[in-house]
Image (cartoon, rainbow, N blue to C red; front, top):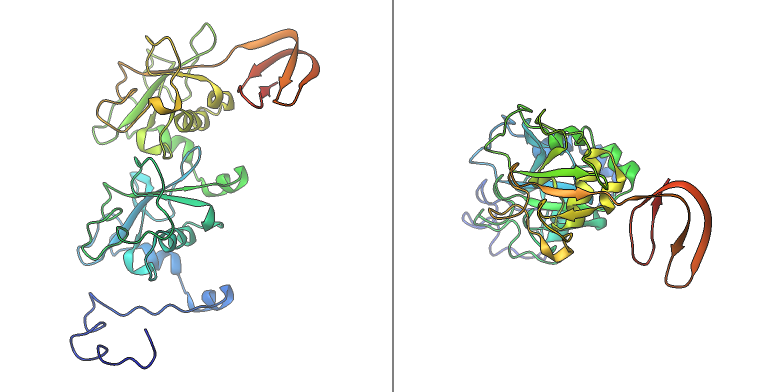
Amino acid sequence: MGDAEKVTILNGTGPGSTPQEPLALVATMSDTERSALESDGRSGLASAADPDTTSTEIRYVFYRIYAEDGAIPSKTPVTSSDPFLGHIRVRSVPPPRTAKTVKFSIAKVENIKHGESISLFLTPYSKSPVDDADKDIILNRTGTGPGSTPQEPLALVAKMSDSERSALDSDGRSGLASATEPDTISPEIQYVYYLLYGTNYEMASKVAFDPEEPSLGRIRADSVAPPHSPTSIKRCISRVEGNPAIAYADFFADTSCDTPLKEEDITILCTDGPGLSPNEPMAIVLRPLITNRKYLIKNRASDIFCGECEAIQVLGVGRHTRYLW
């Protein structure tokens, strides 16, 4: 708006005449100038009078934030029972309220350094991210758009290094897999269940919840980063189990399947998806060890002879094959 415009400003009924419709001023400043003006920006952006309730007079943007291998605890959790569900005030997002400004506002609160590395999904179940310029469905005036309720939060997926991931992750492993009572199933939490196998044997899960089923593990369904696929589910389970080989394992919809799932063959967080019942878990089968033999690393250009080893774990196939010693 131009500095000389005055027809609709301060006329008693125009913009800025009510607390519900204030004006918005966006200042360009350095980080030091920002810090000098900001006494407690993080808590001020996100906190309410009671952190466990949502005021009807204050609008929030609710979101879940992920690395590619699963959910990250939020620095502004709505409740202590779900540390991965964050929120900021709608008013903390400057205009124009595009997907890009929403991403950068949340990135600042969550201390994610590279906002441009974040992909924004309208829901944790969305198959593709929105364009940075999209704004029609983000933070609309009706208060009913994506991210307007804790039940339908936005999802932000950030690409980051292992060190950056660790710095943001206070206790992600236990939080991803645990319930209020480890030997019961909470009706409010949806899980993905899976069985772990070696080549010809069961493997104990680090997040087993049934003493009679040591290989049966589970993760919260909403802890898997979108878009949901066998790859994203295996990455999440791999982090929870502390076993990088799981990210490259064969993944079956259930134990009766003969062939592993392909990338387009899975949808979780729906009523008829695979692995949503402990009675019909998915199956993860680690690829076999190659022992006491010579081996090759292959790429499209050539076959490279690498020598002999006692045992290696095959982690992937395709253009580049990886191995764990």
